[in-house]
Image 1 (tube, rainbow, N blue to C red):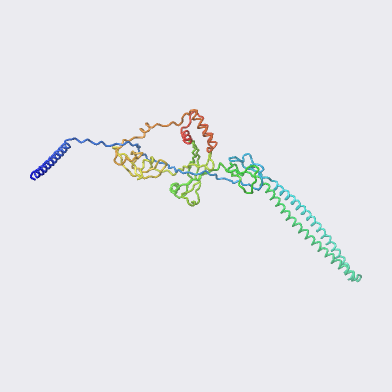
Image 2: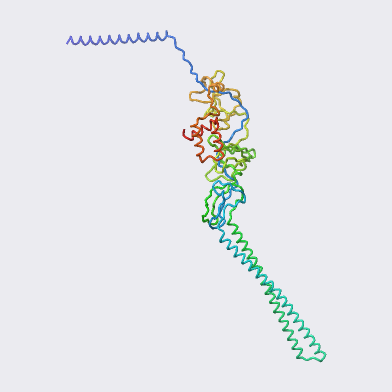
Length: 487
């Protein structure tokens, strides 16, 4: 038992000794580490410098350009409808989709057999009415002569009665003779009344004949008008569209067969927002006659025309917003009704503004400008317009200071940058040439693609083919054509 007690005490003392030794070693090692840290020289930390493209701010007068999209329309469009019912007997040579016609040209003839028969019948009826009027006129003349003869007979009978009365007064006549003369005079007066009644009847017949003659003339004019309506003529010089009729087809009256469009009186209709509309109106709230550039993108060869804003829509359509504006195109060469175009409207000029890339302005409305030590400073500015990938700002107190053109997540206030200025960037950038040569295979593929594309207008296609056949071809046109070809 004593041995066991001594062994346990020995083990306890041994464990205590080892623990004290470990504690002493840890204390000594910690002291050495502290001494080593105090004796060592700290390494300096280098400040990170980021490269950034900068440019000096320059304020002046800028003309904002409002960009919208619209559709070309014709201010003079006529629906061509069949004037009569029948079979189409003849069509003009240019009566086809895209055909050019001139004013007064005969476009279509409808079978005139029925209308000619109606015209001939009306003409015969008119001749009958003229004959009836002539006969009635002669009857009136005869009736007048009868009235005159009856009146003369009545006058003779009256004079005979007067003589018998005179003889009776002188005592040489008889009452029977006077009575006979009175009866003869009354009979003569009755005959005059009958003749006058016949004259009135003849005159009424003349009036009726004249009325019937007028009706026949109206019927003849209507028949001739219906006959003339079997011929469809062009009201003005223009181009045909939506042609739906062929020769030999049976058409109904008022059926639309085509549309006639005047290609020289085109306008563009485009919609802008209320905010853009507020930027266009003048001080009195009216829309000025602003200049408009109408652009049609055709595979790198843009068609452009000048236009003038003429009017705006009288009401906002249901479910729509903004304003619908109309601009008259002055020289619409190459443009057609229905084209979807880009519209650029010049707004009133703005003074004391600077034009910068949109990447230079943050979502918080601040610019990153450089101080004398090339460190970034965040400055709030007034953003006036967004012009595509550019913005127009106003901050006159920043005149001449350099601004970061492209913000990145690592750039912020207090960061030092290595500025890359436009002159250095321009020297390093590789500029594409304006024109480029083409090999035979590449040129043939481009020409075949342009010739097979029915969307391109004929005059634009000819112009593009002429440029593709040149030794040097515009690089922009080649790039756009190949992007659409999928090459």
